[in-house]
Amino acid sequence: MDRLLQAAKLFSPSDVSESVEEWHRAAFAEVASRLSDPDFPCVFSRNAFRKEILRFVFVEDAEEGGFDHLAGALAEYVALSRAWDGRLDTAYPLVVLFSPAAVTGDSVAEYQAFGWQVLQELHRRDPAPWPADVGREPDSASWSMCFDGMPLFCNMSSPAHEVRKSRNLGACFALVINPRERFDIFAGETPSGRKVRANIRDRIHRYDGVPHSPQLGSYGVGALEWLQYGLAEENAERTGTCPFSFSNRVSNNAPNHVSNP
Image (cartoon, rainbow, N blue to C red; front, top):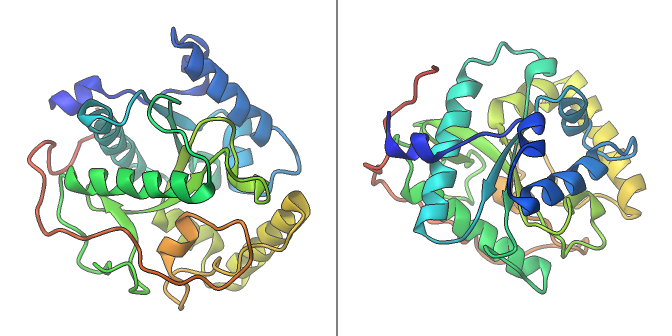
């Protein structure tokens, strides 16, 4: 087995309670307090939390070893996700929590800059070619972050979010990662999918106390994914370019695909 996967560990909720690291338990408790709130907007995350099918990764630092650990854990998560049976009750997100030693910030922008650094480091360690049907440039409507051949949606949540409380999971910076296809199935461009999105966005308005971000949209129909990964506090038009840069190079640090054990 590859050394990255030997070092990686996906935690279940019960695993976290047995962790020797105090910050693991404290960070999990804060996430749990959000997701156990019946008013929390994301019904998918709440469902996964209630059924105890969330998976967690804890990243100790922002050094090479920390990024290697995360890349190995993400490869493990992608392998598990390939075996998904298509049911909502088994669609579990991955919550990546970074220790205070890895990142602290004074603003949403600083935390999001770190988030893009993390995604770039994962891309540098990507063990498989980018899927042919996914755009290479973030300003493409078909762009999505990919790893080990799987398109992903990555939600950046940070303690700096005071207005958008739905993007604040506690004192630690977090990435909430889901396979892109799960959103397409349950909240895609179908009558039922549009209804689900409308419900979640209405819940966001009530929970945050402000309308949902104008950048939230639907994949492949004009809304850019990268703008939705990290949301600004204010509802305003956003300018600028995405920090992510595509590379054709495939990492040699991990296997092309990870088989299920």
